[in-house]
Amino acid sequence: MKEHINPSNLPQHIAVIMDGNGRWAKRQGAARVFGHRSAIKAVREVTEGCAELGVKYLTLYAFSTENWNRPKFEVDALMTLLVHTIRDEIKTLMNNNVRLATIGNTDSLPTDCRRELAEAIRETSQNTGLTLILALSYSGRWDIVEAAKKLAEDVRDGKLTPEQIDETAFSHRLTTGDIPDPELMIRTSGEMRISNFMLWQLAYAELYMPDVLWPDFRKIHLHEAIVNYQQRERRFGKISEQLVK
Image (cartoon, rainbow, N blue to C red; front, side):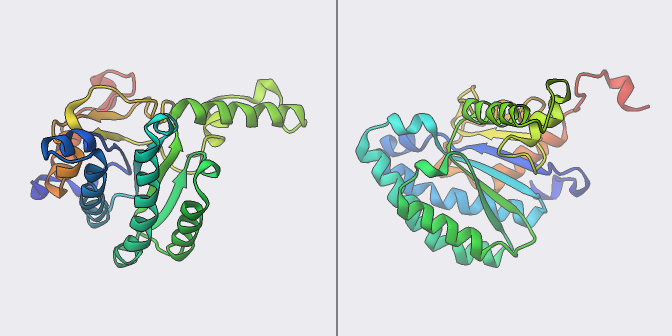
């Protein structure tokens, strides 16, 4: 499948909703946490796959603001897993020239999580290949509300007038303000919704929702998603005839 990918038409930014860990574990007769642990290989594969192809940005929806409402045991286990995974994967990130970044309300994360994240971000900061963005304690509505607050503060402080507020001004105040919007969004497990993920940024993204559960996602599935993306005509509200002019 990789040989069918056109390297001149790669999405700059791929976003992924990593869905299906719980269902995968249930099929194995195991606890949901086992599914989360088994998903680490999928994270490694999709990260390496994007780095190999030359994709510039990969955002993984790792933990939503709504996930805090899950049973405490599962949340605690996820946080512990996150700490260990970040620590264990730094070598992989360095070997693949991957820079780590985060978006979301990371102040709400446990202290050890914030410490490990900060250390990994510092260690990989000089890497120049793929930027891997972990969306942690993130939701699209939270992101939009925070951007609106920043605009309101700038108007209050006289840095901006209401008339100067446009899509560009708003976009720059989102947590993703300095990176391009995703052109391709993948949600595994076949669920047909975007679950409060990058609501503003996904306005013109191509959506790809395969049935494969996230712990089973491999490079071949990433390649299939990109080939599918490259077969689509991205019109941005225009008609086909306008694109060829």
